[in-house]
Image 1 (cartoon, rainbow, N blue to C red):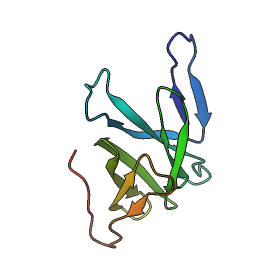
Image 2: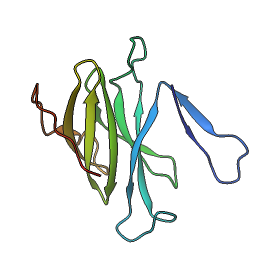
Image 3: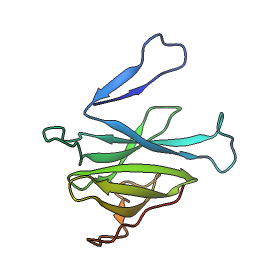
Image 4: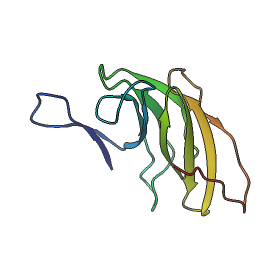
Length: 128
């Protein structure tokens, strides 16, 4: 599993092992082609089991490559997010238990990832 990013002018992507792109946030003043505010990347994913999961969610500034750790992803869970501005809803799915839950994060604040739901046998998800 790799997360790869292209830098303008380069001939090869830069890739990170045991990572994936979970989503992105758009600027409140941009378009899809010009307004990507942050890239959300999960790093240090545990790939030792049948289904990867866990790791740390990072907010990456696409113009500088600088990142902010937003928080730990629960074990056996993978995340998906898309948002506008800094406050972003995140959908998490635990493939081992077929359980979907929701999170929220401020993509500009370290350790801001918060789980909103944790309800076994009830799936919550975000309609994107």
